[in-house]
Image: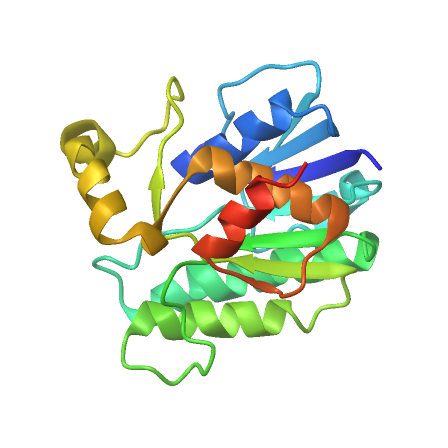
Length: 221
């Protein structure tokens, strides 16, 4: 099987990293990037669809036909945001997008970027973990062939990409320390992209994908 993937969030660090791995992987034959602005990359595999309203993708649903994977990397930080707004931009936007996509591509593997520490009970004290937990739970109820929720921790960037966060530019020297002190909380964008591709091809034993699972999936041949 060859992958025809939809990617969101390609103008951000994570989405760009996943896009990069898709473009260089021979198992991926086509990529559709959906975003509010151009992702800044060109490639024979790549097609872009500029769409400004992720709360209403019904108008573009016919253009989503024929894809068998979605790597949903769009998202916002909860820093400085109240719960209502974070819920809207995290849960409501994601669920609307996925619900429409499930209508036209039910045989698709939907891969969602969540985060380490996400609260599957939806009852914890930390706001973002509850919202992410509800998002994961409701995504897994949708009628896709597969839904996988990825919980990466600290992500090391891919050299040469455009959207590396400023943290890595100025505090990248901390990465070796994190690898020693918290080895179970760090992975690379390359590993994340490879893991998403490999899980789309052959599935996995659990729908919640933690850092150790990402590393295992990335090493599949």
